[in-house]
Structures are given as structure tokens and as C-alpha cells.
Length: 155
Image (cartoon, rainbow, N blue to C red; front, side, top):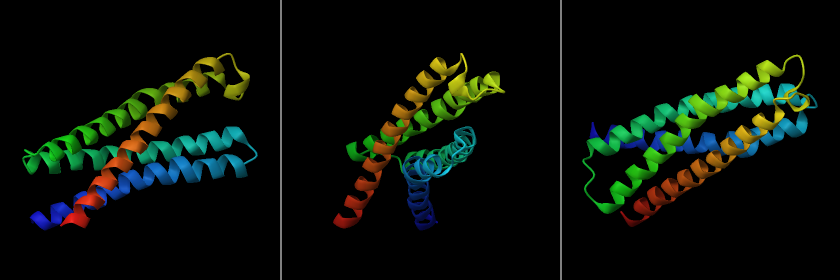
């Protein structure tokens, strides 16, 4: 059973960090480049980020449980726990705070595109905060992947 939880932790980390990178740095930029209707591209990007956010919440909660269950006592294990908790907190802020606020501003702007409305300044600020947090979460995820790979290379 311990082996299964270990493998699930590896898959959870892979799914979480992989979805962050694949959606944020591959799929969404391609979508905005290929889709001439930027309002549609934004709506689709929002859906992708939302789905990735829920995946991140599930994976992050599992990883927290996994590390707590292992009774982390080493400094390295505690550091990983802090990084996972930080990533999970960022996911919560984006998923439950920033994304709904941006969606609300888009809805208030209708029938105009958000960029053509009086709400654009606030939307741009929230989008910027969200982008910075997303980058931090992506970098923290990279740290976890590197730590896991380094642990595997040593064992």
C-alpha cells in the first residue's frame, strides 16, 4: 500500500506541474495566437485555467496528505511540505479569488469585450497579479520536480 501512495504522489506531482506548464506556457499562448476572436480565446483560456486549477487543488491536497502521512521530520521533507502548501495556497487564491473576479468583470463588460470597457483597468490589474502568482507556482512546481528527480538519482 505504501508503494501505491508513493506512485500516486509521483503522478499527482506530474499532473499538477505538467498541467501548469502545458496550459499556461503552451496551450494558451497558441490559442491566443491562432484564434482571431480574442474574446473567445480568453473564454477558452479561462476554462482551461479553471480545469487545471481544480486538478491542482486535488493533486495538492493529495500531496499534502501524503507528506503528512509520512510524518516529515527531515528538513528536506519539511521544505517540500512548505512548497506544496505554498503552491496550494496560490492555486486557491487564483481559483477562488482572482478567476471569479475577472470572470465577473468580463460579464459586467458585456456586450463589449473587456478591453473595450470601463472595467479593463481593474481586469488588467487582476490578470497581472494572477500571471505573477501563476509564474511563482510554476517555478515552485519546477523546484519540486527537480527535488524529486534528484532524490531518485541518489537512491
